[in-house]
Length: 235
Image 1 (cartoon, rainbow, N blue to C red):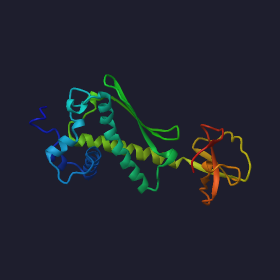
Image 2 (tube, rainbow, N blue to C red):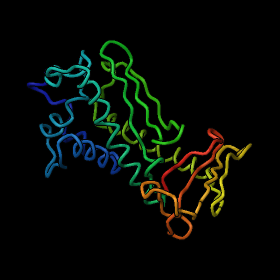
Image 3 (cartoon, helix red, strand yellow):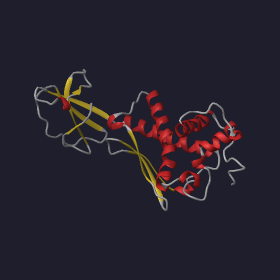
Image 4 (cartoon, rainbow, N blue to C red):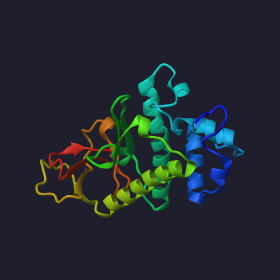
């Protein structure tokens, strides 16, 4: 395709999209260009989404500059990151805020001559919500509908898996005063035990946390099925 005389992504394609698909395209443009366009045209769509146009190489030649692996990494991250952000907004609408150990983290192992691996994990837990791999020169989209569809797939998958995990994730709080819990055995999967200790006279300020039970100063330690030994965690 000669991009000098023909734009791969057009206003006509955009007009045929559903409302969620249009929102997906605008979210990607917002992330890549630093703002949603005030108007839609073939030029704005094709230049803003140039990374994903069909091309023989890993990325379009004009996007490589002096760092091919960096360009490959951006090709994936610039699609996955806004999809993650959209998933977080949807989850907040449903009453789930991901922060601290639950925060989503994007990990990309970029390759210019083999598969690029992309994973979305929970920052502080052994949980992988998404694992995708493809060769960068095959990670392209012929039309806006295809690009929007991948965005919505990533978003929908994240929302569904986070909701499922939270449905089966329960926290039990154990309150102690000056007690020392060494370990808690045979914790079922999906159960987390948090030990809240209000005896803080000898605790450094750096280790103090806010109790999720009453907002008082305390220390918090956690046990779960993966790590039954005691571990300090953020409140």
